[in-house]
Amino acid sequence: MPDVSFVAVGRTPSDPALEGFVDLTPDLVIEVLSPGDHSRDVLDKVGEYLQAGVRLIWIVDPKRRSAVIYRSLSDVRQLAAEDSLDGEDVVPGFGCPLKEVVG
Image (cartoon, rainbow, N blue to C red; front, side, top):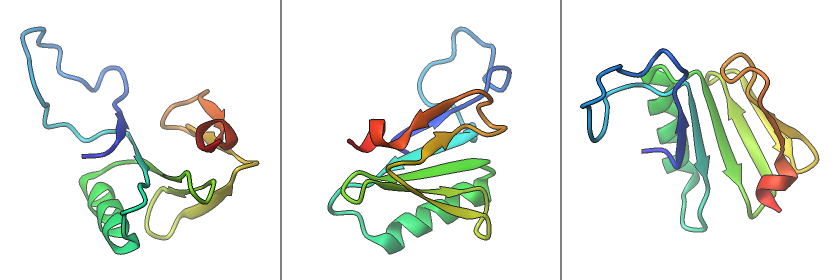
């Protein structure tokens, strides 16, 4: 499970009695790295998310004050603290300076 996930309006089940976890692929997944995370494990998660159909993945590294953005295994961008996270077409209009997230 990711640290944070986002599912667009209209993609969630409309049953108000639904409880617990829903088997639904998020549109955006955010992983915030912990000191004990291993890069291989993180890359495995990214692969699993992409294979499941996640459209946008943010891997945020507070220690390095950076983030890596994945749209696919070949569409990867590195962000520095001076850059901004962008919801792109997945969360249109959302943006956040990375330095506000990583300090």
